[in-house]
Structures are given as C-alpha cells and as structure tokens.
Image (cartoon, one colour):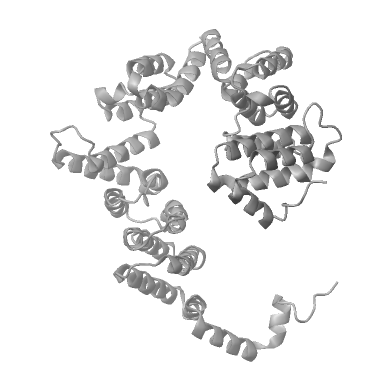
Length: 473
C-alpha cells in the first residue's frame, strides 16, 4: 500500500522541490535555534571538514564562556545542542580528520564543570551527555595517533580535573593510544605530583591524592601488574574488607590463589564489626571464588548452603547447584524450594520465589500463608503480584488486598491512590477467578472496606476519580 501524498516521507519531501523545502527550512530556522545550528553545520560542510570543525570549536567556546545559570526548562535545548556538537565531531569530522575530532572531543569534555555548575540537572540528563564522548576518546585517539607525550599530558590534566566524574575510567580508555612511551610519561607526571602533594596531618580523606593514586592503580591494572597495584594501597587499607576483596580478585586472576586467601583473611569483615554489613558482600563473593580456586570447594559449598538457609540467597543457591553433578541438581533445587516455602519470613520467601523464578511456589505460599504477608512491603509485593496475575489471579489478588489493607489500616493518605490502583487490579482479575474459597469474593472485600474504612474520605474521593465508587450489587 502506497503512503498518502500527505504523509511525511523522504520521497514526498523530495517531490516538493528544492526551492519549496529551502523556504520551509529557512522559516523554521528563524524560530528554532537547534534547526538553525544544524543548517549552519550542514552549510559549513560544503566548504570542507576544517570549516565544520571551526564552527564546532566556536560553539564550544561560546558555551564555555557563558556564565548564565541554566534554568530547568532550558536543559532539554542545551542537551540537544551538546548532542549535535558531539554527533558532528564523531560522525562528520572523525572519519576524515581524527586529529581534529580528538582536539574537539577534549574541548567538549572540558565543558562539563561549567555546565554542571550552572545547572540543576535533577534527572542527570546532562551528565549522560558526557558519557559516550568520553568512551569515544580512546578509539579516536588511536586513529589520530597523537604524539604520546602530548596525549599523556592531556590525560594527566584531565585526571586532575575529574571533579564531576566526567573523566572516570579515562586511563583504561586511553591506555592503548598512549603506548609504552606515553604510559611511562604519565606515570612519571603522576608520581611527581604525588611527591609534592602536601600530606594531611589529620588522616582525613584527601580527594586529590586519591585521584592520583587511583590513576596509578588503573595503569597497574592495564599492565596486569598486581604487585604494583598492591603497593599503592596502605597497610590500613589492606585490612578493609572491600580493599582486601579487590586485591584478592586481582591475585586470583593472576593465578595466585593462596596469596588471594591471605589478602582476604587480612581484611576479614569480622575484624571490622561496625562495618561488616556494608562491605561483606563483595568480600564474601571473592572468598568463595578463592576457596574454589584453592581446591576447597567443599568448604565453599557449605558456606553457600548456609547463606541460602539463613537468608534465602538466590545467588548462593545458583552457585551451589552449578557445582553439583547434573543429575543431582533438579532434586536439590526441589528440596530448596520446599524449604523456602516454610521460611519464617513470608515476604522474604516470596521475594525469593519471584526472583528465582518459581511462580507456582509463590502462589502456593500466598494461598497458604496469606495472614503472614506484610502488606507494607509494597514494592516487592506489587512486582510479585504483576508476575502472578496471568497464571495465578487469586494469589495476585490476595497480595494486592494485603497492600490495600496495610495502607488503609495505617491511614497512609499519600498512598491512597496506590490502594485504589491495587483495588482496580483486583477488579480486573475478578472475572478470571472462578472460586475465591476460602477467601471472600471481590464484592464482599469491597463491602468490608466500606464498613471498616468509611471515614477515610481521601480514599473514597480517589475511588470516585477512578469511577469505582459504585454501590455493590
């Protein structure tokens, strides 16, 4: 079927003719700055890539000079502008002149501090603008083949200016382009900066020192020099669980399992009771990997099973099953699911079944332990109810009833809209449920709400908004 002549397609626009299209574009460019800028760049391209690069450079310089605050309503337009400059650099300039593109990308990334300081970017829209250009620096730098010392100097300057995280991971990104000479020069500059950096006397965190040390550690990682990485951590840091885990992970990758175990035990979470919960997860994960790597799989399996038994940790159970003979896995999994069905905390068990996933068990638990389900756990229950709705509508309804009752019982007026939404979901599932026994029907449940919560005027007002405040037949 051919598109209508009024449909906006490339062919229909071509049929309008160049003169008509030019007039329309000119008119639009007088009203829309973004269109005007795109046309300016398109015209500049006719004069050559250098002209396009000059146009981009001028625009970036203008944005850099500006000191005006960026109001919330102007963020979208600025984002469009920045993406246009970025796309022009990467798609139009880089294929023909990667050297110019590299220069412009450095200028582009240098805008970040000014942009952040002048705007209130509540949705992080602008921060995302600088993510992909940072990733593109590496590939374009390799094609541009800059002088290694100059690239190392630019990298060093950027590392020190990473106050807003716009250059995060830069060492890894530029490492291939730096080459041996550039890497050596960058190391020398960082070490020289650290040598003259004033030491704090109060042992408080020093951000600038941390940035420089982190860059050296990133270089060590790229060179796969585990010992250099470790040498850049202090004895006190090595006793911190998360640092011990990071060191052990690198030692494991280098095939040095016993040393990894020693590093982990130096930073055992139980030695830092006040910070155990905050840093133990990463440590535990690497510890189990190290046990496996050092032929202590049986001990690792015991710990995994304990983690599952105590917390219904699905990650631990998956790892446990993975290491069993294939013919044992199904029976052990079934036993684990039956155990979870009787777990003391019904909501934790539901979350486990939802994430595993095993919806038949989630439905069974809901139907047999309804009174134990805490309706205040609204975020996880809502997700589970959505999963159950298709195949287990009664279980989904019972979860939504639990949330409704929790909201009304506590008179959480800010959540009345959610309660009405849950009730609407129950109503939509009503036709799918042939038998509610031993639970009450949807109509009886709503009638009970009217009696028990008749004074919750805010809730019933929202019911009217949803067109649900009708008498029950």
